[in-house]
Length: 158
Image (cartoon, rainbow, N blue to C red):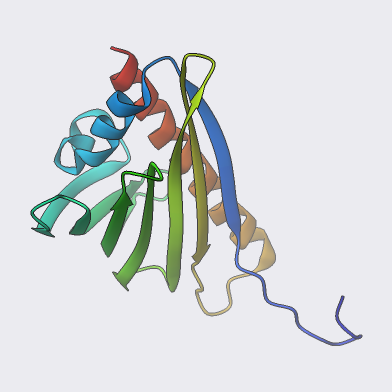
């Protein structure tokens, strides 16, 4: 709680789970294949992998995403750090259109398949952006995360 007139600034968080009828290893394999994302994720226009460690556990990539509701694209450079033992990837924007974007995916065995847990914190500040527009942006980001998880589910189960 903040005192009257205080301004507590919290970044929006989008967190969700997706049940996938495929083994964890298969789901992780699909999730690690960044170059394929534009072929099965409509909101991803392109991804260029700039560098990948020999073991594939550190990946630097450039993304171009679509925001069809506004006819816009967003661009960013992202660092992914995979931990196969923990079945987790942590990612963060290193530069780009978001003021901040960090998060992770966890791949958990559940009910003979996989539960993919997604956590995303972002900040996308535009001067004079009103509360209503911030809610619209949150809705779009939530739809985008849901769409990515649905696409990984479809590809993993096929």
